Image (cartoon, rainbow, N blue to C red; front, side, top):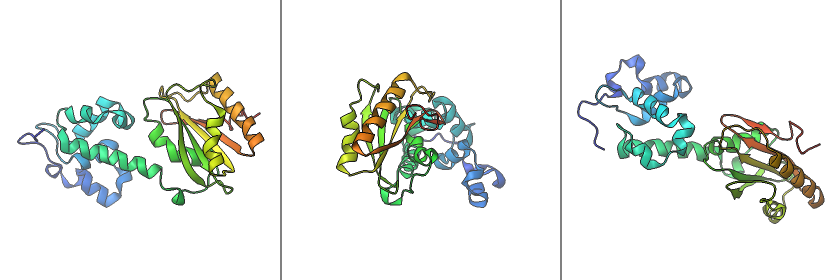
Length: 233
């Protein structure tokens, strides 16, 4: 889509209102999400600034998580977007996603549920289907790898314990952490979540591979099964 003639530019705003200048002066943390998007979008439409377009983008897709989930074609087709803006937004989201799952060498040791959640929460909270992943840890609880185990409806009967432990056995891992998301946004554990946690923990005791935790990722929050003492009694 070609930019409309007479579109509003960030440069048309007063200096103290321009997102780019404010970012340089006070840092990105001082900008709201619509303003950060405006830096990427650069221009708006006739009668609509880049900041307003950024807010409309968020409203249309239900915030950043919805924007992350949206197909490229959906973003591109929104009035005022087009190829250049859609690719910039999708590229920025992908960069953030990759940053959250850095190379194993740069990941810190896992010392709390929050440490583990920080590695996967950004991406997994935006997934439209349920995914079960496994953080594979060494003897110092440093992340060696993150393995995708299942995609789709996950329950105790469909998850094979042998398949869950196979990646950890191959890497001679000392411990694992299970993580799965609830696309509904509600991380409340289900009976299947409890049964799976208990079965994996008990199998890990026999294999000498400790299940440190099982995290359930929801919309903007997570639940630690170990902190709740669910399946770890």
